[in-house]
Image (cartoon, rainbow, N blue to C red; front, side):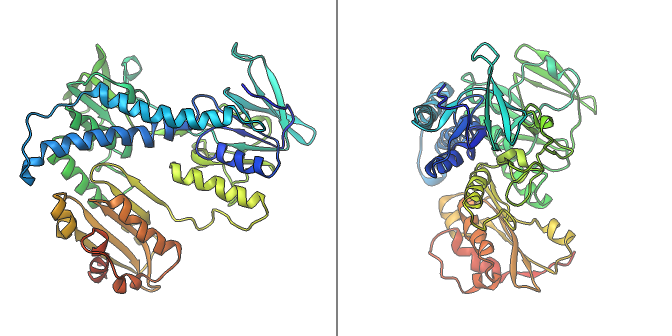
Length: 468
C-alpha cells in the first residue's frame, strides 16, 4: 500500500483500463489522486479477458493451421497441444504487462495506489468519504475528496439452473488457468465469450458442446450473420445447440450431467458458464450519497459520465455504455478532456467491437434489424467472404460482409465483417462513420490488392434496396 495522503482532489475506485490512466493524467495536472483496486492491476482485460484469451487463441490458431496445413501442400504429423505450456506462455506475457503497469503505480511518488476494496461512505461537508480496510489486510481507513471516479468493472453471473451451484463449474476467469485438457467441455452460453473460449478449447482437443438458450448464437447480431458463424464452428467440430433450456445440473466429479427440457442429457468433464455479466455496482456505497442506477444495476450517467450526484463519475463497464476495453479506455480520455475544460463528450459515439472467434467478427453501428426498427430507408449489401481473393489465397473463406446504408442520406449506418481479418477491416468502415463521410466514398476508394479490405468498393457496388 502506498497512501501518500488522506485528503485528495480525486479518488478513483477501480483499476481497470480507465481508472489508472485517468489518474496519471490528473496527477500530471498537479492533482492529488488515489487509486483503489480490489485485485490485480489491470482489471478484467489484462488479467482475465482480452489479452490472456488472445494469447491462448494464438496457440489454438497455431494448432489449427498445423492440422489443416495439408490443404496448402504442407504435411505434418499428429498435432497435439500441451495446454500447460500454452497457459505458461499466456502467464509469462500477462505477468510481464501486469508487473510493469502495476509497478509503475505502486512505486509512484505522487499517485497513491492501494490494493484494497474501497467504498463510498457518505459525505464530510463538501467532500466525499471513502473507506477501505478493516478486513485484516489493512486497518479501517477513511480518505476524502471532492471528486470520485468509479471504474469497478463487471463480473460473471451464473444462470438460475437448478443444481448448478453444486457443480464445480468454470467461468471466463478460472478456465484461463485450466492446465488439464477436458475430454468433454460443455459451454453454457452461445455469445462472444462462450464461442471464443469454446473454439479455443476445441482446437486444443476437447469435444465442445455449446448450449444456447436463444434460437441463434450471438443474440446481439443479425440472425443470418450469427448462423454463418454457427456453420463454420460446426464445420470445425463444435456441437452448437440453440433453443436449449437446461432444467437441471448434477455434479459428476469436476464435471456435470446437464438435463435439458426435452429430457436429453449432456455429459461433460468440465462445464464453462459464459451466460452473462453484471456491473460491480452493488458494493460501492452508492446509497450513502444517492447515486442512481438503472434496473440492471448500471450507474446512470450523462454524456460526460457525470452520475446523478455532482462530483461522482462512472467509467467503463459499470456505466452500461459498452463492456469493452476500448470503450472504457476512451471513457477516461473523454472525461480527462472534459475535466480540463474541453468540449468532448460521449454523445454520438458509434458502437464498434469485435468477436474474436477465428475468423473473427468486426462490427460497427447498427445491425440490419436495428436500422429497420429505426425506420431508415435501408440499402443493404451482402458479400460472401469466399469471393474475396485474399481469403481464398489464405484458405480462410468462411464468413460474410454486410453494409447497411441510409439511402436517403448516403451514410453508412452499420456494417459486419465476419471472416478473415474482419477485426481489422472493420476499422475502415468505423472511421468512415466516425468522420460522417458519405457511404458512396467507398465506390471511389483506392484499395491495396490483395487484401480483404480491397473488396469494400465491390461490396458497396452490390447495394440493393432492402425489400423486407
